[in-house]
Each structure stands twice: as C-alpha cells, then as structure tokens.
Length: 259
Ligand SMILES: [Zn+2]
Image (cartoon, rainbow, N blue to C red; front, side, top):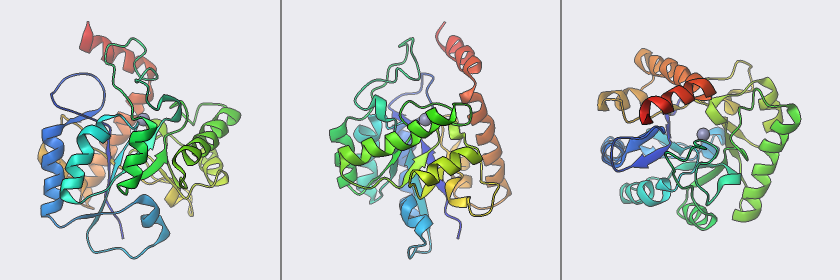
C-alpha cells in the first residue's frame, strides 16, 4: 500500500526569504485537512517494517531540523493528534544555518538537543540528515561513509534511541549511497521525488512530496493521491531538488531575493 510522504522544511509566520518554507497559516490548514479527511500519521520505520497499518495513513517529515519544527509545527501537530519524522544535520544542532546561507542574510536556528529529545518523547521519529548536508552522490566514498555513519552514532548517543532512517541532502543518492546506508544499519532512506531503480532498494529511496509556500492548496490535496497529477508533482520535485543542489543556482536565487 502506498502511503503519501510529505516533506516540510522551515515553518514561518510570514511570506518572504529564500529557504524552502511553508507559512504557519498554510501548515495549520494542511494539517487540519489531514485530520478532517481521517488520515493517521505513521513513522517511516513502521511503514517499511510492514507493521499493521490502518486504511488512511500519511507520513509527515521535516528536513534540516529547523527550530520552527519544534516551536511552530509541534503545537499544531499535537493539537490534531499527529506525529512527524525529523531529519537532523548533526553538526548544526543548536546552531544557525551556516551550512546553507554563509552570508547570514537569512539566519534560521536549528533545534537544540533538548528540543530534539522533547520531540522524541512526543513520539516523533528522529532521523539523520548527515553531519554537514553534502551531496552524497558527489562526495568521496570516505566522506560519504563518515556522513552516514557518524551522524547516526551521534544521534543515538545523544538521544538514547535507535536511528533507523536517513534523509539524503537535496534528495540525492546513488547505488553507492544505498550500499553505505545499508552497511551503517539504517532501515530506510528518503529522497525528494526520486525512487529506487533496483529491486530490494525501495525502502532506501522513499519518494517524498515537498510542500512549499508558493503552491495552491489544491496541490496539497494532489500530493495525498496516487495518480497522474501526483506523479507530475514528483517531476516538479525532482527539478527543484536538482536546482537546490546546484550552488550557482542557489547563489543567483539568493542574489535575486536580496540585492
Ligand atoms: Zn536538507
């Protein structure tokens, strides 16, 4: 059974800025909609383990572990009885997004260890988003192994629970990435728009639908379906992921927004 997997990033009060985000008003409307439609949130680990699933499931994920997941998303999800999965860049816990915007034009804080601990206690699934957020396809094997293995170790050590899932930065992975992730002991991996090519790798390339501020509400409903329109949304997601990993495009985008 296919379960829609949503990928959020930053949640903020107003429109503006250059990070991938959703406004709090949009987020609240989307989560209320899931609730009204009878969806139940499950973890990725439960999904891939083949645990007993209800008839209408959704997986809600947050990449980058911005603090807004704790301050803004958690109260809304709690109110409607949902949990989420959050993917942490371990080097930047309790730090601002220097990895993303070194110019500091758009500083956003990441969750602290204490906040991540609270999320875990709320039933959230904590996953790795590597140590430094590199493109795992283009880094060396040694570096990719460190990113995948060490982030898992640190999270497990600090949060005292097993980390079973990884989200690939920019949604980027290849066969080598999947092999390393399996070797490190993960049970699943998340992408943005892409699926696995090889049989037996499906759990290591779970395709997610990103949710973004510029999308009309109707498109959110499409992301929950399993049809042609939903597939087209995944094509758009692939293009966005490709653009996000391109440093030049990121630079141009930032300049456009701020100069
Ligand atoms: Zn990311």
